[in-house]
Length: 103
Image (cartoon, rainbow, N blue to C red; front, side, top):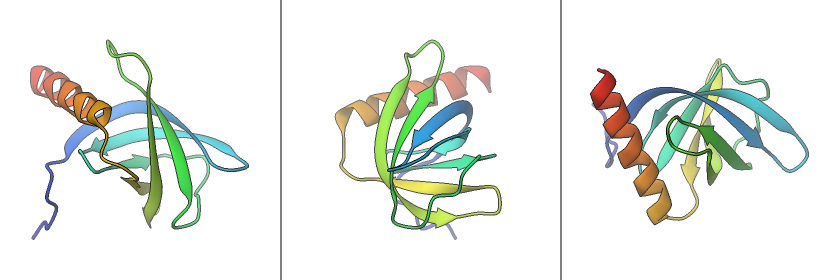
């Protein structure tokens, strides 16, 4: 049973991310108001690492999200956002509209 409080939207958008001393790339595969998951990543950051995501969604301009790594997977990692940001809510709403229109 899924215990998440916010719905997650399946996506497939390119993303870059930066850590304190490294940069990587991956694919944003799901997104919610409180977190995101990247797969096909080039670098696995340690748990609890601060990460800055740069998400490239068309027609929305590149978007920046700051969070902490909360889970590692075989091909990526999950991030929980550090603060509740109205801009993140707007991004998720935009993504949900894009996903609904294409599905």
